[in-house]
Image (tube, rainbow, N blue to C red; front, side, top):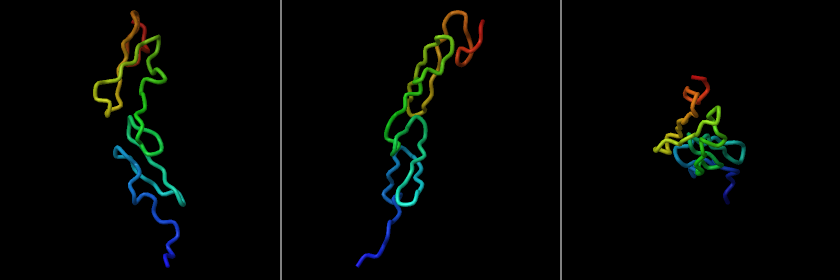
Length: 87
């Protein structure tokens, strides 16, 4: 007879892409690394939604999607990392 109640849901390593698993009573929660999200860190989150660039700047994801980084192409008359300054 197996009398074990519950168990550790993190033993099956449900968190993908180097996410960290934490036990919550009888379930688990994943702490995901950028750019991943979702219950098991298996969804790529678009860092450009919503647009982080000000003044109609255009958000461009950087080539290494695993980094979760982006840069902004600013409209004429604006500058700064996220186009936050007037030239």
